[in-house]
Image (tube, rainbow, N blue to C red; front, side, top):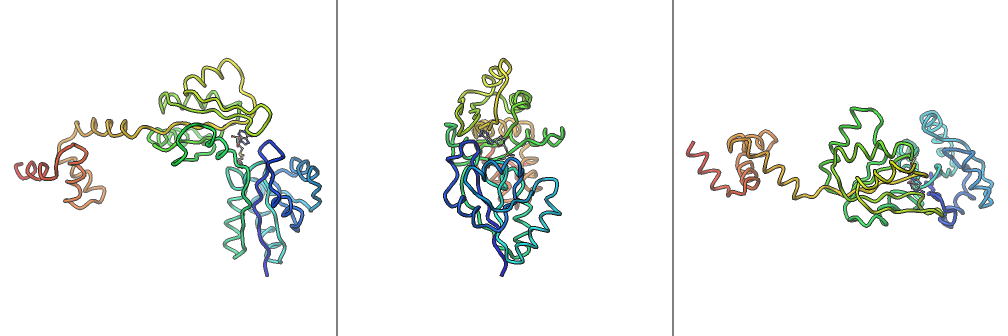
Amino acid sequence: MSGTLFLCATPIGNLEDITLRVIRTLKEADLIAAEDTRNSIRLLNHFDIHTPMTSYHEYNKIEKGRQLVERLLEGKNIALITDAGTPGISDPGEELVKMCLEAGITVTSLPGPCACITALTISGLPTRRFAFEAFLPSEKKERRRILEELERETRTIILYEAPHRLVKTLEELLEILGDRRMTLCRELTKKHEEGFASTLSQVLELYRQKEPLGECVLVIEGKDRREILAEEREAWEDISIEEHVKLYEEKGSPRKEAMKLAARDRGMTRRDIYQYLLGK
Ligand code: SAM
């Protein structure tokens, strides 16, 4: 029988945040796959864990992933840990989980610290609906595309960022999203934890003056739905009723539905639209 892959969440700053179940699983596993073995050895020493460790990271994930799957198929239990937080959330893990599931291996996740959820809960922004975007891509065109998508996002937005890129990212966000409420969360769970609830422009102003320290999560207010509706209304003013109905037909709506949607956008009834089109 094959073994199990255990995804073990580890502290993002405060060692007391490790769970009893994670400690036991790390002790009982046959092997620990760690993103950075030099970093994880400190954690393992602290909790008196002596399980053998091997590296599994972004640059060896395909070859090492295959080897780990083989070990699991032989019946070994493997615990995966990353530098910090929940494996698979913006760090290696996703690929290994996929490979394991394809090989019919059981994967289980031991919940624990995760920077995005920790930040969201102290942000003061709506938590019911949120969009986790992790790190913005560095490639210029792709980055612009994602930022433009985020401009229309109505859910609370969560981004990860390294301190040395924070100011540049805030500048771009302000330019494309406009000024919005946001909370900058730094050093979560650590001694100098900070949740600075303010606006994009004010956070930018502050960090232009003093260099940000420590890892950070940006939690940004989603776009107000009413703004989107107002923008759409303005856009409809530039096209005729026929074009408006056609637009929905081209998107796949049957004619009746297209007339209903165009009527809704324009604050008219479907009957008005029908009469108008008949009269043409
Ligand atoms: N797997 C991790 C998790 O569950 O959140 C995320 C790993 S990702 C490579 C690292 C990023 O997470 C950092 O650049 C930062 O944006 C965020 N992060 C991790 N620890 C943090 C902390 N203590 N305070 C603020 N942000 C943190």
